[in-house]
Length: 472
Ligand code: NAP
Figure (cartoon, rainbow, N blue to C red):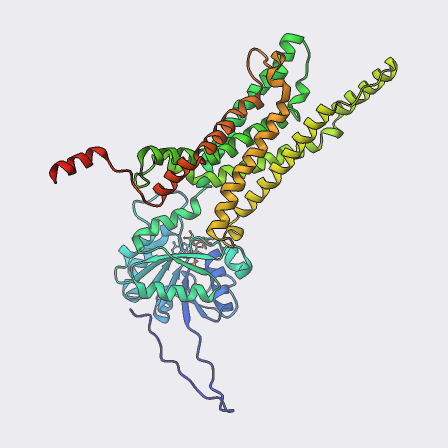
């Protein structure tokens, strides 16, 4: 490799103190946005920078202290070249192959779309200059992040390449610039790195689809049972309820179902393991995918629960509510009647609110502990205690909150508009099933078998055993 390690020329200044060795010179091809930001950052970190440009005399202002020259001259001056140019313009590099042979070429390029080209940009570059050591990296940083320095949140640099020495050289530079380096292996993973900046919330896609699907279903379900039913059967227009009342029904319903969806796959997995008598058989792909998006499901559920809290807090200031309360007071004073305090209702509503508050508080705790900065500070046992035990406690509180909301209405025929149960009753089915199944799994005899299976014990296969015994 010709990224020559120059012998450090240590000269002595007149006072006898050794002068600092000359900083390493790095080359950047391209004086565009990324080239300038990278150059500035390299200069700030103590490197010397030489730009290689098509127009060395008219390329506009560059970071102070940088030199600018032709591509050929820049290639000859440094052992490491950052290619801050678009892949579409790589063609001219072929003519520079003699000067670039043996050098480290850092490919920072990205594409506009996935699979735009048959091979990764870095592999294409390696094919153009087979004698160079191509390293893919820095492409997940933006020019803006580079300019902002280490204070920016994006501190990770991904690298891949076939030469360990070349990667080591790039890693040293990245570390000096204040980044954490993640080595992703050989150049064959370059396409993966090039696809990173093009990703659009891949792990949120399924949970968001579930949220939209459930919200749309329950919105029309509640709309039919409340607004359309009132119009058709009673001739009353209560469509104004869509904005707050209906929203405040849909959000908690979807939130409770989504919270349950975080715990249901764990229950299914446990049942599968008990049925199969081993943990060494793979789960179906759909179950794996489901388990992988539990965190996102839970965070969306928490967001919806938060909206439910906000909508509930504005109830006392709603015009409709204030009007109704005023009406009730005036009509009672006109009739000169009073009412006894119904302690059962007081108990029910207090318990209902209390369960809601407790459920939301533990829900928040779950959300906070799922943040990487918090979860990294927890031991595995602490994390699993919060996510599993407190998670089921949240589900229990929220389910009880919904049961208390329904109270005696479960038995009132008037609750069942057009013979269908209200939305909140539907939302109780899944959490109730999950809580009952969890209780069954906690039974000592079941829990013992499950723990043994999870520790590696396998139920023997009677068919194989009989064959074995026949052979012996
Ligand atoms: P840019 O502002 O368009 O700059 C590209 C530079 O390439 C130009 O300034 C020019 O420099 C050189 N160039 C243009 N046409 C050329 C040609 N026909 N032949 C040779 N050189 C040519 O682009 P950029 O935003 O800096 O991006 C550069 C590369 O970094 C791209 O591959 C991009 O995908 C990648 N990247 C950019 C960012 C970002 O935030 N901008 C982030 C990650 C990765 P000279 O005039 O000096 O020759």
